Structure formats: C-alpha cells, structure tokens
Length: 282
Image (cartoon, rainbow, N blue to C red):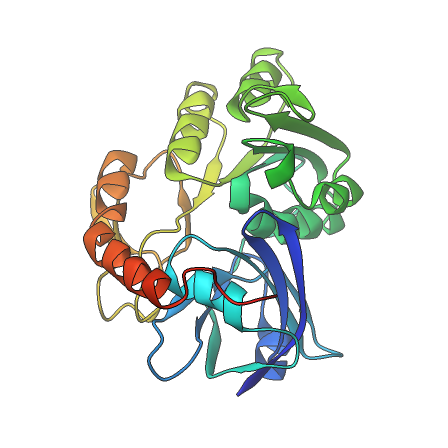
C-alpha cells in the first residue's frame, strides 16, 4: 500500500499528489511514468512522474479528473489514505545533455511532465526557453516552477485571460522565423498541439521530441494498447517511449486511436456518477 503524503488543488479538476513510494523515488527520472491502481477493482492509470524526493520517498504526480478513476481519486482519496498499486518507474527517461538553446513547450496538463525536463535541461547547462499554455487563467499551473528553471518564459492562454492570447505554437514559430538558433525542442500536451508544434519545427529541421499520452493498460508492452506508428514502424509508447521524434509520429492515427475506448469510458463514468452524483466532500 502507498500512502498519500500530500494532496492539493492546482485548478479546476487538476490536483497534485505526493505519494510515498521510496523505490520509485530513488530511481525515477524526468520523462518516466508510473502506473497506479486505487483498489482491487480499479483500473490501471498511467501518470507521468513530476518529481522524486529520495529523502522523503515522495513521488509527485499531477492528475486531471477526466474519467471515472481519476474522478474517484479526486473525490475519495485524501492525505493519509493509501492506494493499492504504484508500479514504476516505467518507460525511457528523457535524454538530458547540453544541447545549447532549447525550447520546452507545455500545453494544458502537459506542463506537469514538461517541468522536470526543463529543470534537468537547465541543470545540464542549456539555455531554456519555456512556452506554456492553457485554455484560460484558471487552468494554468506551475508557472512559478517553470519560471524558476527557464531563462525566458512565455505564457499563452486561448482566451487571453492570462499572459497573451494565442496558442503555444505561435511564439515557437516566431522564434524560429526570427533566425535565432534553436538546437532542440520538447513539446508535451494534447496530441493536436504536439502535431502542430512538430509541423512548425519541421521546415527548420529542429529536432522535436514529443511525449505520447496514448492509451496504456499494462505499461509493459504486452497488451499493445499504446501502439503508435513512428516512421512507418509500430512502437509501444510504454516501453519504447513515451518520448519519440515528433517528425516521425503518425499523429492522425494516434488521435483516431485515442477515442478507441470512448464508449467504455463513458459507461464507466456514467455508472460512477449514478452512485456518487455529488462526489465526496473534500
């Protein structure tokens, strides 16, 4: 069993958890993820590692409540409670080295897994330009953390309620068109956002890494649920990734597969809401 050491709300339906998992905390690196299961009847949820503290054994995660299990976690699991399974670290860690000048782009919940990558790239000696975006001010989080590890931070919101109005791909394009030398780009967020960012960097031949949050079930490459097409070859996001060359990913196929379990997910959520229509008091 794994204890919830801390739980706090970052925005509407967005929560940060610190889970006591000493083995993972000692080994986890930027870019990797864990798979947790709340209880014996729970589904397996893949979540990217935000931070590890080997001294306390704490592993930080950011969870957006979009389905039955994440909603149940937010409603019914609090500080001091325990969850049944917490497996990891899984996946390949981010390749961290001194590339030169890099751009780290996070959209929506993608800001959470982007933060440790930007942090470690800065520590490796890179000049880090951060670009983060959300639909509105309420959904923006970790701005202070990103500012602390970036030499320059650009904040965008779709509605202009915070930072400047627009999409994260806008300043990316402006920087590249300015002629400024950019050696590497990371883009993490919704599939369509990563696709657009990869399309922007392709003509400039800037290496662009994306992190694929496709459907995962076992996290070990056995089920094939996270299969993605990379340069015409089938890869598994859980064991071959989750990071891939964004210029080689078939995003159209990825986005079509992300809706594969939509009917089952809707049924599960409807069943949960029929039992807990108001959730559980926080």
